Image 1 (cartoon, one colour):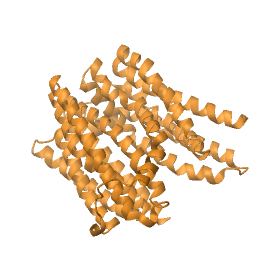
Image 2: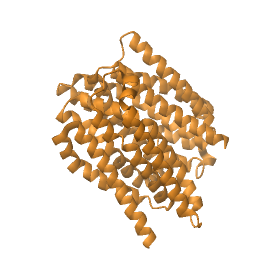
Image 3: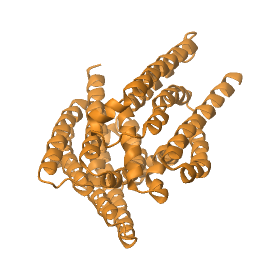
Image 4: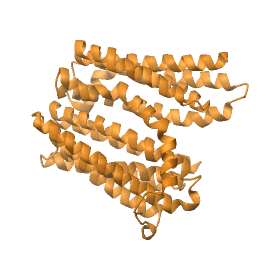
Length: 406
C-alpha cells in the first residue's frame, strides 16, 4: 500500500514537471519558438514511446520475475541497450536537424539538436524510475521527481532572467535535470561498483524483450499518431505558431488526461480480479459512468472558464481560439471512455484488439484527417483528433460486444 502511494506521487511529480515546463515555455517564449519546442517534443514522445515499449515495459514484467535473481546482469544489459538506442536516435535526430537547416528552418534545427543531446538522459530517467518499481523502492523515484521539478522551475526562471530561454536551452535543462535524477536513482537502486557495461547484449535477455515488444511497439506507435502527427505536419499548411496554439490549448487539458492515463493502469488489475464474478459488469459500468461524468464536468469547466484559465496561464497570448479549445476539450471525455474500455480489453488478455482499434484510427488520421487539416487548418486538425478517438471507442466497443456474444 505504501509503495502504491509512492508510485502515484512519482507519476504525479514527473507529470507536473512536464506540465510546468510547457506552461513556462508557452508563456515566456514567442509563439514561433514555442511551436518549434512543441514540434520537437512531439518527436521526442514518439521516441519515448518506442523506448518504453522496447525496454521499460518488458522490464516491469521481467525485472521482478524472470530475471530477479540475476538483476544486476539484467540491469547492465538494459543500460547497454539504452546506450545503443540513444546513439542511434541521436544520430538520426542530428541528420534530421541538418536537413531542416538546409531547408531554411534553422531555429527548428537548433531545437532538434537540443533534443538530440538531451534525449539519452531523459529516457534514462524514465527507465530508472520504473527500475525502482521492480526493486520495490518507488520512494527513490518520487524523491528525485520532487528534486527534478524544483530544478526545472528554478532553471527555467534563471534562463528567462538572463534572456537565454529557448527551445534548445529548455531541452538542455531537461537533460541536465534528468542526468542528476538518474545518478541519484542509480546509486540508490544498486551499488555503483557492481555496474559493469557488458561488451555485448545477453542474447536470451535481448530476445525476451524483442518477443515482448513485437506487439507493444506497433501498438504504442499507433497510439502516438492520432494526436501527435498533427504537431509535425501542421507547419506544412501554416506555420509553427499554429502548433504552439494547439499545444497550449492541450496543456489546459493535461491534468484530466493524465488522470485518465493513471486510471487506465489502475483498472487493469481491478478488472482482472473481478472477472468471473457476478458484479463484474456492474463494476465496469460504474467505472465507465463515473470517469465519463467526471470528464464531462471538466469540459463544463473548460466551456465556462476556458478563456480565464488561458489568461491566468499564458496572459492574452492564446485568446481568440475558443472554438479550437472547445473541440479539443472533448479529449478528456473520450479518453476516459477509452481508459475503461482499454482496461477491460487488456484484462481479457486480448491486447491485439487495442492494436487494431488504433490502427483504424491511424488510417483515418493519415487519410481523412490530413484532408481536414489541409482544408480547415488548425480547426480541422482538432476535429480530426476527436474523430480519431471516436473511431478507437467504436472499434473497442465492437470487440467487447463481440466477446459477449461469443
